[in-house]
Length: 126
Figure 1: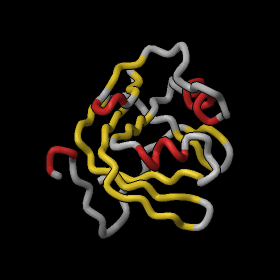
Figure 2 (figure 1 turned 90 degrees about the vertical axis):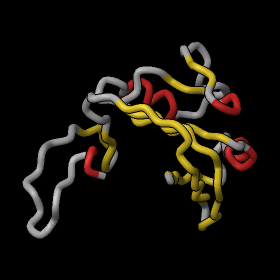
Figure 3 (figure 1 turned 90 degrees about the horizontal axis):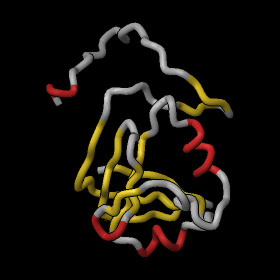
């Protein structure tokens, strides 16, 4: 399962409310421009970008660190946002570093010491 939150006033809100499928893209460190493009209002944020068509016609961007195609399972209105919950139907992942945005700035991930009492598991062990 995967979830994301969307402002109820977002131009794409009605589309997500009625869509059977949606995709979530995790961007790599080299994709800051793409992040900025999708964070600003635009009539068609996909205009001029090479996209593949996924299930239900959902647009899929290439070259992302990870990509999840989901069916919309539920939506919960909470205040001025809606929490959309999806069931992952397909996914792809790469090996690049993730693009992070925190406290108003893009950031780089850094390794961290293990937390006492926590067990680190490899992706294959999950």
